[in-house]
Length: 139
Image 1 (cartoon, rainbow, N blue to C red):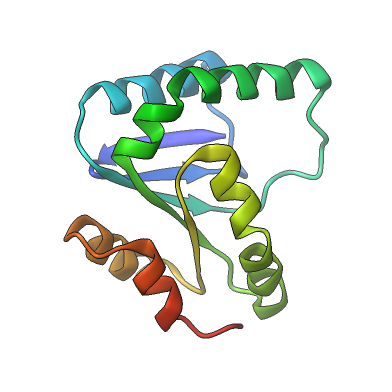
Image 2 (image 1 turned 180 degrees about the vertical axis):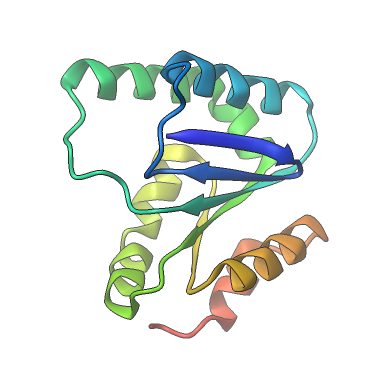
């Protein structure tokens, strides 16, 4: 995963790319974002690779999330995941409650980058993710 914070408070997470500097850099970037104590929105791009995380990687992510759960809940307004495929959007929306329970912030699913940026702007302006989600079509 590659974390791009150059357009903060919009932070892009490229799931189909890796940071050549390693996962530790991505975790550190994310921690630095949380330390700003300023609300931001994540935009998720690209399908996650088909490779399965090792038990050690899953444990590391889980421990990191638990250490940062309160800050994640406080400062991340939502993840806006871009998925052009209607079928995959539907699947992503059905897993949204599990995602939110784990990460502590909601996930919204958009069909395009332009739509995702519009949703991000609304979130940053103070609209609640639940209100925006209620307005979105099911597919």
